[in-house]
Length: 77
Image 1 (cartoon, helix red, strand yellow):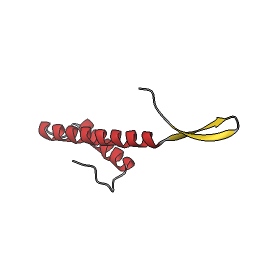
Image 2 (image 1 turned 30 degrees about the vertical axis):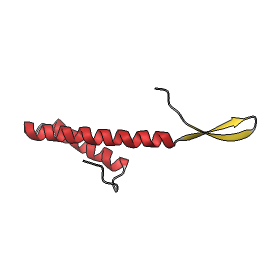
Image 3 (image 1 turned 180 degrees about the vertical axis):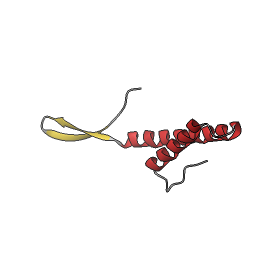
Image 4 (image 1 turned 90 degrees about the vertical axis):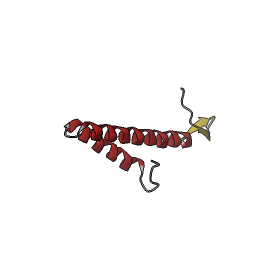
C-alpha cells in the first residue's frame, strides 16, 4: 500500500490514531484486529519515511565571523 500523494503527514497520523482507538476498544475480532494492526504498521513506516525525507531537507544557518552561512543539518546516529 503506497501512500496517496494527496495525503500529508498529519492525515496519516490521524488515521493511525483512529486505528489505535479501534484496537483499544477491543470490539474487533482477532482477524480484524490483526488487519488493523498491519495497516497501522504500514502507516507508521510511511510516516517515518516522510520524517526522514524532511530531516534531509533541513538546513541550519551558521554565523561565522559575522557572515551567515547555510549548512545541511545532519543528525548523529
